[in-house]
Image (tube, rainbow, N blue to C red; front, side, top):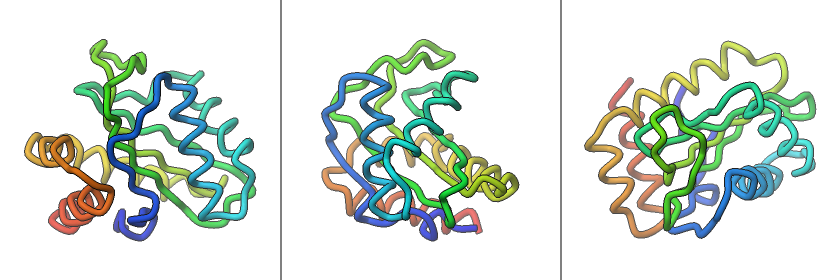
Amino acid sequence: MKISQILSPEATFCSVSISSKKKILEKVSEEMSKSIDCPAQDIFESLFARERLGTTGLGEGIAIPHGRITACEKATAVFLLLDEAIDYDAPDGKPVDIIFAILVPENANSEQLKFLAEIAEVLSQPNVVSQIRHAHCGDALFQIIDQATQRLH
């Protein structure tokens, strides 16, 4: 699996101004609904339900909200770099500024785990995270993630 199969430059955003976890999930849901045939509200409910089970904040300013939904026929992703970090209930207590959200079909358990593992591995590399935080546009962010995931394969 390659992240570039589910993430596009059009779903990669730099310097996003958002003030809360709920608003992040709303933004991600709106963007995901553009690439799959599913209402943003349904996507939001899936992502929010997963957050209620426990934070998807990994620590070090990174969160990977994710969900599964019946109406979703293919996996999709949205990547945001916030202009200012926000509280995300991360285990290390640090605010989050890097958001990589993933949505997969309801029955795609192994697919979701593969994507989560791959993006977590990429975002655990300090040099990649530093490049992300210094990016100035969505296209640059997409290239950073795409190149980092290609190096894994």
